[in-house]
Amino acid sequence: DLVLYDDNLKGIKLNETTLQPNQTTIAFKDYVIKAIDLPGPKINKATITAKDDKGRAVRNDSIAHVDLVHVILKKKSDRESALIGEEIIYTFEIANLGSATVHNLSLWDDKIQNNIRLKNTTLPAFRNLTAEASYTVKNNDSPILINNATLAYFDPDGREGKANASASVEIKCPIILNKSVVPSLARVGEKVTYRFEVNNSGKGDLSDLVLYDDKLNEIK
Image (cartoon, rainbow, N blue to C red; front, side, top):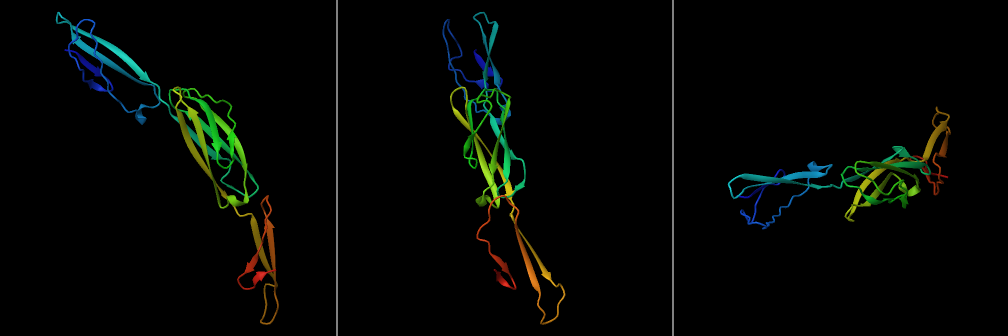
């Protein structure tokens, strides 16, 4: 009358329900790890019950645990908008939310185009790691600068895992145009003079400037 029960897997079917002395039976049952199992470890207890040859109830328990791997990456910038030529500081937050230590961490950003230096390349369970990197805005980053970071790591079994994060910064136009006219009051046949002031408010050069007015057409 062998009965095998697991507090997570419930009843487990045995090929043998009677065991002779020194006889062994083996059973298997799969389980898919769920988000609710985090942060781990996943611990469950199995209980085998039976009756001996005198009809007395006997039992034994056994516990197994599975360490869980769950690493996340967050990325944020020090500003919501920037001008061409300005520097943006990015902060990368790595969190190991699982119960397993991860190794050989490496962090890459597709705009910075470099491995970002980490203080540690091993991150124990339930620990965090922060890194910073800077990027100078370029002409072709307008109007929205989006860059993506990828964290690679290895679990204790040597399997690679990855986590991704993105950040966006609005790139404001660095060119400012102010238009004024003198005099501001005129009669038919009188001449007025328009003044156009163009300012580069950014930190990079602006080239191929063209000034156009809807009444005066191109201004040279």
